[in-house]
Image 1 (cartoon, helix red, strand yellow):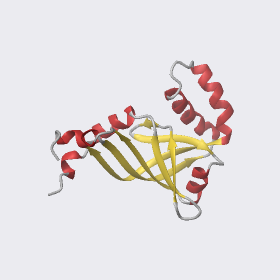
Image 2: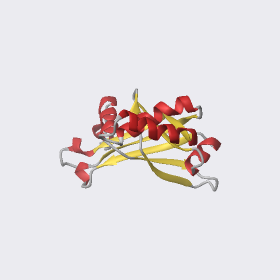
Image 3: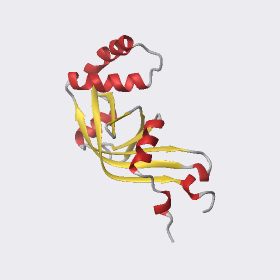
Image 4: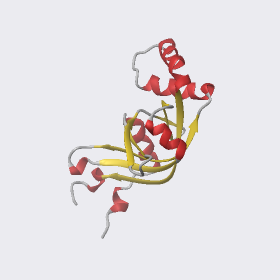
Length: 153
């Protein structure tokens, strides 16, 4: 009998988990039809994963061609600690610099502890014209939290 139901995260647990983690793996489909996997800094914005990347990156080019991605984030080392989420997403690309800028500010603020708002804004202002924002809209979500099994498999 499958114990999948027992290890599934609730929406609240998933949101908290995503907010706790720091790096998500983003899979897009490359021009050769193979998965292209890259680590990505992100923020959780109203329950949605949001990020930015260089417009000329392979990831961005792949998303221009096919605006779909699969995201995965995981934690734990031993089997009874494993937890994670896989999100199949439609991706909204944001090209307009005034719309990319707040995405960049949110991401850089999260990953620059102790940086002043002015310092973050200065870095983002230089980078935003070369970047695209990405808003990931999940179409399917699979989660697991083996800690819920209580050590019994």
